[in-house]
Length: 328
Picture 1: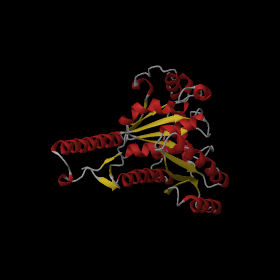
Picture 2: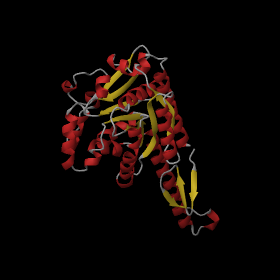
Picture 3: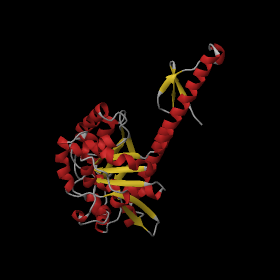
Picture 4: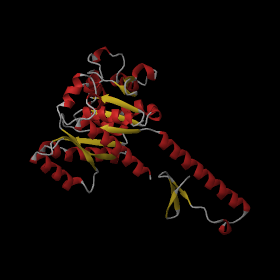
């Protein structure tokens, strides 16, 4: 059922576009004018319904961003992706960090041997070449015992060279978006693991995304860096990607018994809580996160009952609940 809101002399249906109100029948003029009005109304309804339907069938792209390294971006990408897949969602992970940490975590130690990576796809896009078939560059991670699988696009060090090439590329901020746009209808969530920088790669990720998740460790310098990051996110939103929203700030490697952790959390909440969402879920510190990488597994797979596993599954549900509330 279509719903609408009234804004002055316009209807706004499903968060889409505005079109003129149609006066009640008795207030209209000739039969011809009435028919034109009816046609306009029906066209407007159809157009907005079509746009809304397109929006609902497109997957949500979330960029996991922080210019500071070691805050848990890759761990969050892998475990959130697994948790969402476990909840029945179609998930695509994109390794967008030249260090290729996510690719290694998913079982590909020799990243240079991969024929197609996100770097390859971006190079083809910059050269205006046709991208290969999806089965050629999309890899699938499977856990047969739990019957869970999700797709991912790997990365290699070649992405560092691509960042240099982007400087002279046409529409340089939108190269990644152009690569991913055809994939959005096939997934519920596309999650981008970004590099620890504020360079052109991160700008591409922000332009390609509809939402940003910001992992923050409970340390003063990590919290201090939020100010610079938020300015860049708002700049991209204002100038290039108006639909970009901050999904939330996520505390990672949290040790509740440490006074510093509680102090930094309080500082961040007092500074940003009224303007920026902060997840209720906090990812605790655990050595199991590091051990899971050795076995090329997510923490959820490696030790299901671990506090980190429980936290990431809780985070996935919080992400779904937030989106459900937004759609209402």
